[in-house]
Length: 110
Length: 116
Image 1 (cartoon, chains in turn yellow, green):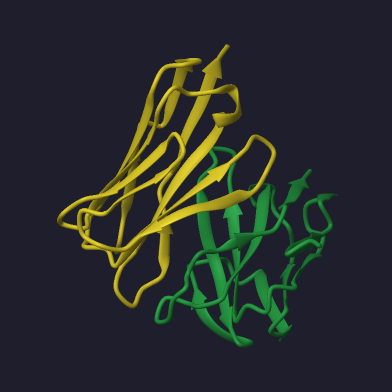
Image 2 (spheres, rainbow over the protein chains, first blue to last red):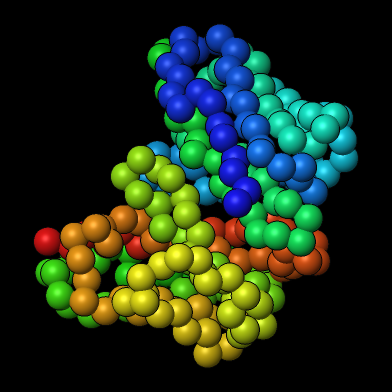
């Protein structure tokens, strides 16, 4: 079945450093979504990427969808303490359900 | 206004008991979901309903039974609770489903179930 692998599992950065999490699918995706879950909270939708090679930005967050539509990344520039949380990618095959990656837990030292 | 709400927020119960979790969404969405998040934060889909019809039924013990009385509600009933059922259960909704966009999901606040 469809699998979505996400790395790293955990990252601890100094405030102001950059952070990247990567997502890889075993199959071609129709779209990929990213969610953020704050500690003790629930997943919150951040963005959806649909087109091959697509790049979208939200302030300090940059999202990319690979040319083959099998991988994606989320890059945060100059992390802040408010960025703390777990970041999930979720990939959808054509006509199939959304499958979540295992998440990357981000901790930021101030 | 709360978009997706769940009750209760916390549930502590003993092994062997039966319990229910309720979910309501006021977004007018057609699709609702139940997810289980374990202690390692892994989010696993359990069930999904589209317009009250079951469309996703993952490999879940049949002690778990969802019920959707209408489009805005999706409840989860669990029989004969076991220690391994301890987790956070999230309800979610989306306007579309995997055959019709938009697919982004809106999650409820979660129900932390602890089985002792």
